[in-house]
Structure formats: C-alpha cells, structure tokens
Amino acid sequence: MTTRTTPSLTPESFCATPLDYIIVGGGLSGLTLAARLSEDPNVSVGVIEAGPDRTDMSEVNIPGYFGRNISNPDVDWMMVSTPQECLNGRQFAHTTGKVLGGSSALNLMAVTRGSKDEYDAFARLGNEGWDWSSLQPYFRKSERLLLPESGGSTTSRQETVHGTNGPVQKSYPLWHAKTNDSFFETYEGLGIKRNHDPYSGDNVGLYNINLSVDPENVTRSYSASAYYVPNRDRKNLHVLTEATATRIQTKSGTDAVIATGVEFQSKGKQYVVNAGREVILCGGSFLSCRLLELSGIGNSEILNKFGIKPVVDLPSVGENLQVNIFILSAIRKVTPNTETYEMLQDPGILAEHLQLYETEKKGIFSSAHSAFSVMPLDAFATKEEIEGIKSKNIPTMGTTKGQLRQIKIQEEWLENHEKATAFTINLPAFLSFNPSLTGEPGCRYQTFFVVVCHPFSRGSCHICSADSLATPVIDPKYLSNPVDLETMLAAVKHTRKVMVTSPLKDYHLDYEQVGASASDDELREWIRNNGISMFHPVGTASMLPREDGGVVDSNLVVYGTKNIRVVDASIIPLVVSVPLQDTLYAIAEKAADIIKSTSSPL
Image 1 (cartoon, rainbow, N blue to C red):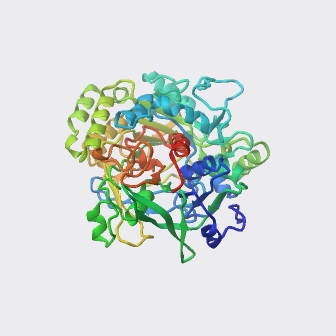
Image 2 (image 1 turned 120 degrees about the vertical axis):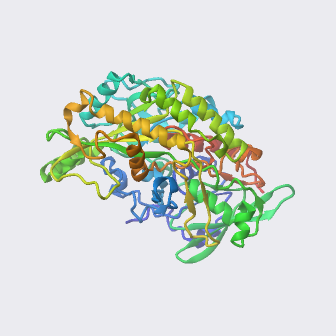
Image 3 (image 1 turned 90 degrees about the vertical axis):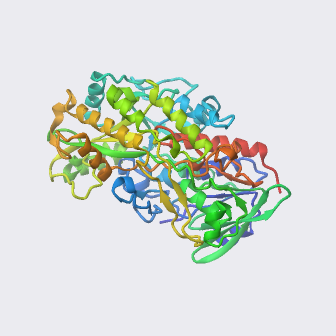
C-alpha cells in the first residue's frame, strides 16, 4: 500500500517542525480541524494518528463493502467492553477506527441528524452557543448534498438545512432493496408518517437517509478523502501516521496547567513534539479520556492507584459514558426472488453487480442500507407499556448534577409524542451476532435492527494501568437502568408485529429467531442474550459546567488547563438519537471557528 500522508515525513522531522497546534487523532474530528486550522498560512498544524493511511483501500472506498472493516485489526482498535452484568456477562467489541479518517472510514455511511430539541439540550445543560440554531451553519458548511434529479418524496431543497459546497459529499442511495418500499408502506399503515426532510430539526418518521457517498465517483466520502486529501500539499499541514500519543507534557501556569507538547511512540521508539499554542484531543470517547488520565488529568484516586501524579483533579474524566444498544429484533426468510444481499452468493449475480459498479457506478455495490423508521414512544408502545417504562426509571443512578439534569430531559422526551425514542433499520440480508443462529445456504433474508435512542444507563471508561498502550476499561453498564430494557422490549414487540403485517408479510416465509408466541419474560432474556453495542459512544469528556460533572467548557477547553481542548464525540453531554457522523462534522467545524477566535501563542 502506497503511503499517501505528508511526503517524507518521519517522526524525527515531525518533531523538528515548529507546530502551533498538535491534534491527537487523525479521525473524523481531527482531520476536519486540521484542514480548517491550516487554512491560516501563518500557523502550522500537526496531526498524530495511530493507524495507517488506507485512502486507496477498496474495502474503505466502495459503498457496498460497508461493514467489511469492522474487527479488521489493520484499521480497528479492537477494543472490548468489560463483561456486562445486565447482559448476562457478555462482552462487546467496540469498533473504533485506527486508520486515517478514524471511524468515518469504517462506519456504515449513514448521514442523519438529531432533532432540534436534542441540540437545544446541549445549551440547556449549560453550554451557551451550542443549540440547534448555532450548529445549523456548521451542518451546512461541512456538506455538499446532491439531490436526485427527480426530487423525490424524501428530498428537500431548503438551503437553510442542506449545504451545497462543503467537503463531505452526500447523496441519496443509488440502489435499495424492494423491501424498503414495503417497509415504508407497512409502517405507514401502522400510523408512522413519511418525513420529507428529517434534517430540518424533526427526525421522527419514515425516510431513506442520505449516505456519505460521493455521487460523482460513487465512493465513500469521509474525513480523509474530504478534508485531508485535497489539502495534504499545504506546507503548514503535517500528518504523521502509525504513531500513538502516550502523554501530554504539561507545566504549571499562573492559574491553569499549560500543555507544552505530546509524547508519542512510533515503531517502538519514544518521541516528543512541542506545541506552540494548543494540544487538541480528537481520539474519541475511549482514547481521549485515556490520554487525559495518562497525563495526570482525571480522578486523583484512579491516577494515584496507578502511580500517576495528578496534575488536574477532574473526577468526571471518563464518566457519563452513554452508548446506544441495539438488537436484531427479527430475521425473516423471504421469498426466493426478493432482492437481498444473499443473491451475491450466486457467482453470476456477483460478477454482474461488480461489473455494473465498475462500469456504471450502479447496482448493489453503489450503496449501503438506507431505510429508517424513527419513532416516539407512543408509536410503538401501548399505554400500559409506557406506564411500565416510566415506572422503572431510577433517577438516583445519576451521580452528578449534570447527569440528573440529563435524565430529567430524557423523562420529558418520553412524554413527548414528537421525540424519537427508538428507531428501526431495514437490512435486506441475514445478520446475526449469535454464532448459534445462521441462515440456510441458498435462502434470502430480511433483518430488522431496533435501537434505543436515549439510553438512561450511564457507564465509564478509565485506564487500567500506567501502561500508555493498554486498552482502557470500557464499562457502558448496558441496561443497568431498567428503563432501557423495557423500552427495548416494547420496540422489539412492535417490530415483530410489523413483520407479520401487510404488505411486508407477503415477502416472508418464517421466523428464524425466538418463537412467535414468546412471553415478555422470554423476550427480555432474549434481549439480554442478543443485544449489542451501536458503536456510538459519547460523554466521557462531557461539555458541562465543572460543578455539574463537566470535563470541558463551552469553548472545549479542559477545566484546569489553559490550552488543552477536546473535539470529538466524548464532549457530547447527552446522546443524540441517531448515528453521530453528521453531528460530529458540525461540532468539529464549529470548534475550528472557536479555536481560531480564542487561541493565542504561549
């Protein structure tokens, strides 16, 4: 594989380069920031990325190969959770991109936004300037959306919502399974309405999502291809791959700790690179908090336990972890002529679609999954189930003022008939993470994902030793708040009903999972045995007032420091209802403007 990063850049030359900004993590946020900050020719920007450059890798670039790099150690950190008590002791892989572009190179390319109220909640929790209206310009700035020539029922030409000149290319799916149409028609018959533009602040309803796919060459558009590749020849942008940051070097200032540089390891050697202005962490919800703790910024009890001298006692580092949980709620065998990914098992059909993609950029390899049904609680739960869900809440599980305020907001959303509580995804294929459940050769399948949008459960992520390369202890505490289990139960029961409702049922032959007459207790146990991570962790460096359990302020500066910022999913204080990609681009774009206006040389 040809290296495509900064030409002739070695760890030695990187360290010898005067750098104003050192960005730790060349993922979605890191490369977005690097591109925007290096627009100023008077500053120099360095990026330290632990993974390799794989911008030429077909498994990254071809949309129809989505999911192939999950658990690929070449590009995935391969992190695993602790055994989860409320999921019968099971452990989960937590896919995190270890590659230039980070998780934006591995994700399923879904482009979705939360609701207006979800972003307004950022501001309600004490972060002025982080509401929906403040983020809107940055959603638009990051994207270029190409609308279908025919318009269509799920498109909008509102320039106040969609961007037309941004780096990230977005488009509507060029291919989707015919079952998508029946998926929508069935849900409509059950009272869920079509949403003609879920990006305008109301994301409830039925829609085909946008994909981060460049419509001109029909390849994945992600932070490496969108922000880095067009700018990699800038003289003031320096990207070092296959180098892992191990500690932030600091010194005491008059009223705050000052970061002076970053220690990193490359090919077994240790290096130090100096920072003229700031150190910016963009490692994601697991690795940014790890680096803070390794650098003496965190809970002093945890730091002392591993012989790390506390520099800033900040107990909330690594806390407030929130991760959506999802389950493959129903898998049905479908009629033999139904279009699903299983048809690619036929060598002739596979060759046909590969040729179609190669020559015309069409067919099954041109797209990823697309059909969403985003629902408020009363759309899938009965009155009795809703009362049961609300009665299960344990508000005292919140250990900080910030968490208690978050849970209060979540309680309001449960009561609101217009706010997302769960969503379902239609996948035209057999998918199971249970090795005992497999499809029959030659058969075709449809799988429904069900996701709980706003988990009430809170977990943590902390170092397990002073070893700078050790995987942190990831404990999401899935389903530890019973509200999450009861919400999932109601959503699963609803999707099982959808599966046997016309016109969707006309495709189906039989169930492949737990029996059709399973009791609620049997379904709860099945959820405990089959629920898995949604791979969108947030909150471990929450943007909240310090007294409420915050790690960074509204300028994303780590409390107790002068020039350390965090810009990634870890700063999100309350999880957004849908996949995070679009939200993170907006956060990084906004962060770049904040840094440009507030940063100064040391």
